[in-house]
Image 1: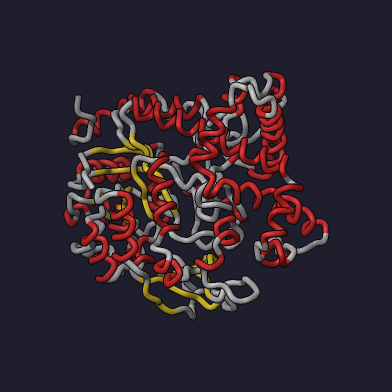
Image 2: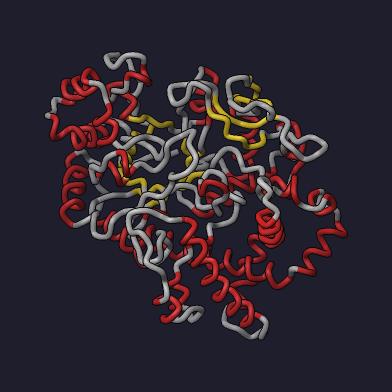
Length: 520
């Protein structure tokens, strides 16, 4: 993958400012693109854009192909005549610094339903302005769209029923009628007919999302900004993906996972991380020529300029945990198809597939060999260079995360969505760790955050990226996610006006100084 020396910012769409409780694809997204360009940046990295489920994590969506309806812009729907100014003016007073997902979902779902109802009514006239474009969209996405819309229509009813009955698990494999869970043809046909109108509205919402996303991406590209997307290696059990293709996952006769994904005990957690995603039946994937994976990656490449594959090490081998275990301690490593999968992807999509390997965690020689044989750039996390819990000692000159050990063909991040912010980590670091930062970077206590930013930008790494929180110097309260915890994650939002012209100038100057500014 060709990488010109560049830099950028990591900020999820949900974190953008705006009046509707959550960032979206509307005017504030375009304003952020403008500010990136003003600051001399070339990259905007986002988290997965799928519809979020339990815990609101973008890494556990209801579909790996669909878009998150909560990110649809009401303002753009108003411009299209699908909502009124009065309906937007009725928005509640949402918190500005956090996403209250419950409140946002309650208000915005009803609002979007009205827009979808109007859209579907206009489609029914068979002469509406949307018909031709929607037909093209449906044809292009039908391999996942039909099943996703049916899944969500059915899920809405059974989730509500489970809630009324006090049930704790409303997953399709547990709570749905058996014929429907097994996708018996008569059950599927009956549900499609019975829920035709609801299905149409769900498809309309997906059309809204991807129409708005395409326009935003085109605008970003026109301003010289490339977008890095993100796909999780695993998918959620309660998803259209597993319901539609249960044979591709390790499920028992009752459609329950035999083993689930996670990672072994490490510096993040002494019990490891039990993610709970069903693991893949890789033999089944091989038998079908990895066609599901090819469609998945092709879909992502159609939406982004580059794709970061989360937990890349899982393509060499993965940590399988018996589903009955409460923690990830008692798992084992199982082999993955590795190069066979990527050979199939490249044969179908071309040799220069722009993929970034998230090569963090327990990385062994076979993982490095797979990454390097494929020519994929990996990641370096600057925060780990000085973190004694990561390296075992804060004074190891051979630590791969120290800038003098980088190679050009990689990306350096000051931190990721799973890390504490730079300021938050520095506040909690030991005196020895802070002293090492000061000596290595030749900086003062009041300049440590920007000294670390300068170290990333000045490094030999082809791309340098910082979370928006680090550029603002925000503390631990602004971190995006704390691994192995549920609740309170994914909620941080950028304050209105925080990314101001002064910060843009400072970032632009640093970017130009270290040769990362766009070339005229």
